[in-house]
Each structure stands twice: as C-alpha cells, then as structure tokens.
Length: 344
Image 1 (spheres, rainbow, N blue to C red):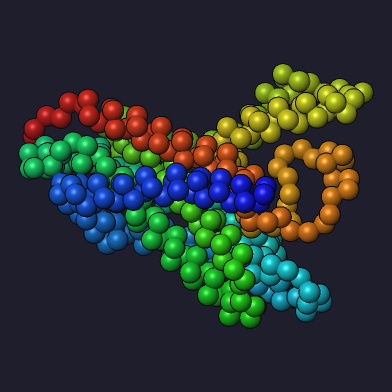
Image 2 (image 1 turned 90 degrees about the horizontal axis):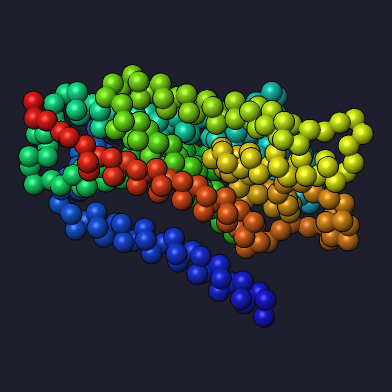
C-alpha cells in the first residue's frame, strides 16, 4: 500500500514539472514575436565562436575524465565481476589525478550559461538594435522570454550531446551496457544539470539587464560563480565556527549541532545542492545526505537505494534550484519590462 501511494505521489510530482513545460512550449509556438527572437538567438548561439569554445572545453575535460574512469572500472570489474551499476561508475569515478565527470560538469557547466547570457540585453542596448527590434510586432515580454528560452534550448542540446558522447565512449571502453535503472538515473541527472545551468543563465541575464557594460556584467557573473564554487564553503566554515564554536572538550551533541548548521548553510549555495543531488542519483548505495549517526546505520540492510527513494531525498534540492531560477528570472522580467529604452 505504501509503495502504491509513493508511486502516485512520485507521478504527481513529475506531472507538476512536466505540465508547465508543455504550457511554455505551447506559448512559445503561439507567440510569433517570441518564436522569431528564439530562432534568431538559436542561430546566433550555434554559429558563435563562444559556443564552440565552451563545448570544446567541457567536452575535452569530460571525455578525459570518462576515459580515465573507464580504465579504472575495467580493472575493478576484472577483479570483481559481480559489481552492480557499473555504467554509473563512469560519471562518478576518478583516477590518475583527474576528478570524476560530475566534478568537471559541476565546475564548468555554469560557464556555459554565463557565456550565453551575460550580454543578452546590454549588447542590444549598446549596439542600438533594441529599439529597432521592439519597433516590430514584438512585445517586450516576447523579447526577454525568447532570449532566455534560446539560451536554455542551446544548453540543453549541448548537454544532451555531451551525455550521449560520454555514454557511447563509456560503452565502447567498458563493454557493459546500462540497465534500465541506470538509464533513468542518468536521464534525471541530465535534467538536474539543465536546471543547474538554467540558474546561471538566468543570473547572467539579470546582470546583463542591471549593467550597461558587457565587461561589467561578465565580471559580475564570473565573480558570483567563483564565490559559490570556491569561497562560499570557506565563508560557511568561518560563520559556523563563530556561531557554534567547538572546543577541545566538545561533546558529540555539540559536534552534531555544528555539523547540521554547517550543512544547512552550505545548502544555500546552488553548487552544493547540485553536487549533493548528483551524488545521490549516480551512487545508488548512498542512502543519506548530511551528518550520519550510528543509530541510523545500525540494523540497515546493505544494498542499493531504489530510484524512487533517491528522488525523494533530492526532491528539495531540485525544487530549490528550480525555484531560485524562476525567482531570478522573475526579477529579470520585471526589471526589463520597466526599463526605459531610447531609440538611437
């Protein structure tokens, strides 16, 4: 009975995400101005040098990580042929000094969204083409929506191609095809990565609206990326030590409170949310997130966690990333609709 209720709840959650996506696609098709902006931006993105450079950079780094991981997996499978979820190891196995595929994607994928969005609006203003575009039968909301959807479609197609190439290379190298659950976990990981890149894309569009100079907006985006990727963890460590300092005679309860505070503060970063959710999807034997107590491990039957329960654990992470993306884009939308645009 519980499994049936969980399946119904899981289907309801998925439908709450899929239905708005279909509505957005229908709106995109029904708005001629939005479709014109989107198709024009798609052509610019796919023929631009920055798109080629970013795809080449992320592709080479990812393929290198997968190649090293495949060599490590082949040695492990030869020693223990009964290992489960071999194909998923391609995405979270490191070797020979190279980090795993998930680390490369989590570190470099935000640059993809930033590169496509940091000059989405201010470049049009500086060149004087904004007023000419809006003089056509194109509404303001169609302009900003088309810009964002074009970047989102471009990043989605780029990530789909990257995942397909990585999966094909891994299949050739290790010779073990993925099972159904592995394919589903990789697809959910792809969706998570698209939402993660969409967050940085919306942030880049926000900077392009607030700053007139493209160099300033680019520096703001890069600074935000470096802050959340590198410096945020250091800042959280200082804040948690200041709020709940631990002495040499700290009891286990104080250590647990300190660890929970630090984990909660770290989850304010989109990078932390992404890495935790990706780790849960690609490591079926991972059962918990955050601090783990002995009482939680004692008596547990070793084995992989079902896909539905893994999704239930990372559902707050996905909702947090999705809500942050919508909130930032809502600010972009309101600011752009109120912006004064003078004809050149």
